[in-house]
Image (spheres, rainbow, N blue to C red):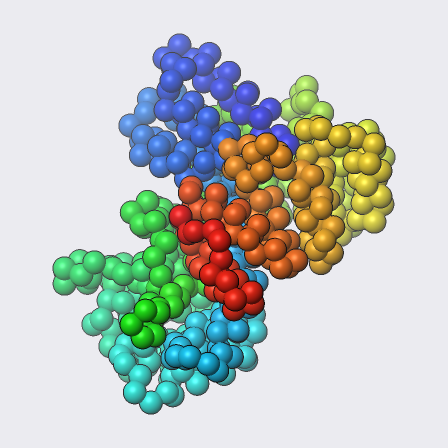
Length: 497
């Protein structure tokens, strides 16, 4: 819903500045300006600590700003996770096949994890078993492998094997206990109370004067993000940049390989989505901002797969008088998606056709339709033709969103050269990779198109810029530079920030 961001932001800023007790440099106003520049983490870290101490009259606007911020951040991290899986799986697969030089002993474990993350469970279990059975494996590496094997067995409905894999572990070790809690959460084994286990692991580490390493922090986040415990998860994220590797393997005096948790970016996205719902629901109780909060809540509920609540939020929003046409159009697109998911295909199709009929001269509406046509199971072919005709006749910033939407649509269609072409046309040429002036979700999609087209340097340039604000992308950068080195015998010409 990027095309509405500036409109809604303007409304909220007017409400803020109109309040007699709120100055133009109020912390909420400052956070919204960071939000407008796509600096979501900076905005949230500025505003969230101040919320509880605010006057009651100022809290709804702050909650709305936080909800908006976490919703956009969740979309960004979800996009990062999707492209990370593509790049990191390719990198680990190539690394596992290397037959020259010093071979990695740990690649099987991380490749197994990555395969589990993309749903290739049987293959992932094969690599994890191979790693677990390796002679001379140092503790606690075998424990970590057996824990992940338990996840694989659980997903394959092999409960007895999962139980055996998860038994006999040294739970006095806080990191192992956190890893097991994360596995229980990932496998949906809630009878083991993974949230309680995670809290106990963290308390034990504190009692033993241990500083949790990257692996432990990520396993704790895995639990908190899946248990809908946003406060614990956000506290972890606030205290840790999460750009460090889960494990660094030394391969001789001058070479080391860094390995990362493939679920990290997904867990951050899930944490931020839970936080978005929480803060938007708080804002929704305010009579001034309730309707605006409903618009964003509908988007958040749809991302969570809760179509019933999404439709309720949209009904609340669409019953408001004098809605600007852009608001109404985008809300109706969400409504069509939600209705289609709950089986009301006829109603969904009617909304879609009505919007499509008036979209030919409205590039923003066309962009929104094109981005939603696949999840709405709508007529993408007709929308694509209208979009192509529009961008052929139009130019300038007015058509940036539509070009970007075409590019993302072609990325989903695996038409990578066309995806690259249109997303480049949807980018500000004077500030081509700057997240302050370009939608970072689009930049992530463009980076994937570059990767698919083997334009590795261009891919890395995008992640160099994104990494300045979002350090967790380091795991993608390192995998990308590894592929660059292996495929083009180059170390890569873009440094990791």
